[in-house]
Image 1 (cartoon, rainbow, N blue to C red):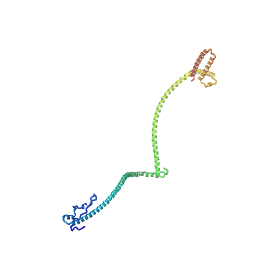
Image 2 (image 1 turned 45 degrees about the horizontal axis):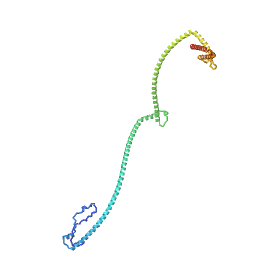
Image 3 (image 1 turned 120 degrees about the vertical axis):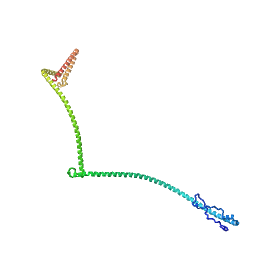
Amino acid sequence: MADTGGYNLDLDNQKRNVFVTQLNERDDEDEITAFPVVKESGDKLIETGINTLQKTLLLKKQVEVEAVDMELYAKRQEFKHKMEQCAQRQIDIQKRQQQMKDEFTNCEKYIKDYEAKRRRAIQKYQTELKLKEQKTKEHEMLLQQMEDLKNRQKHFERSVTRYKKFSDFLMRVIDIMPEDYIPTTDDKVKGLMMRHRTLSESSNALIDKLESTGDEMKDLRQELDKIKGEHSNMKMSINGKLAQLQHKHEHQEESNKQSEQHFAANKGNMRSKRTEFGVIMMAIDNIAEKCLKALDPTVEGLNLEQKLKKIGDHVVEREDVARMATPSDSTTVKESSRGNSADLQKSKAKKKVQVVVTGPS
């Protein structure tokens, strides 16, 4: 720039004007000093304040035009540089946005993975908690079992201490008992205990049998007393019946004596009747033998009633033959046959009565 004739306007060092290309606030705004902008240059002030030459003014105007052109060029370069910076910054912002999207995607994936891990961790925690509770219960149960086993061991130790004297007693018994008292076994104590158990069971069985026998004997005694009472009653009843029978026997003996006396008195009469009865029986046998047919059994195989029946049948047949031989005198024959049959029946009745009367003698 040309010299302006020695006039210089001394100003403080000014900061460069800021070309705003974005809405964001700058961090160095506090460092910017606000001062009134002088739109007119020092040459303009000289021109208005001092009367200078026209030539000098023209030169000044040329200088100012050149300065303005230079400043405009600088501003264009600066604007271009700012635009390039803005484009680059926009590209950086887009990259940053894409990076943020990628980071958001990665973050979302990370959150999902974290949530899945969290759920798995919670599930694992719950499973481990349940397993812990189960193991705790098992531990408590095992502790209780161990305590029970300890108590049982103490009980067994007390039992061993209490039964030690019995074991010593059994050993002393084994030492003094005969060799052939129990069968030869590896464990003599066990054999002796088995022998004792057998004897104890036998003793209990005998005691039970004795008690049952006593009860049975008691029942038998009661039954014997009952039988004795029944026997006494029966004896009294039999004695009563015997007395009655004795009295009846005495009465019968007396009656028999009277019958014997009566029989002795009527013995001659009975003898004659018996003789007559024998003659009648012989006559009946002779008549029945004559009345028998060829196929009939002998007279010895018939009783008195059968003999009389044979005789009656024979008489009826003869009457029928006689009636057939004399038909004119049928009425007389019938009457005579009726009379004969009536007489025959009467004679049969008399014979039966005689047989019944004389039979027992």
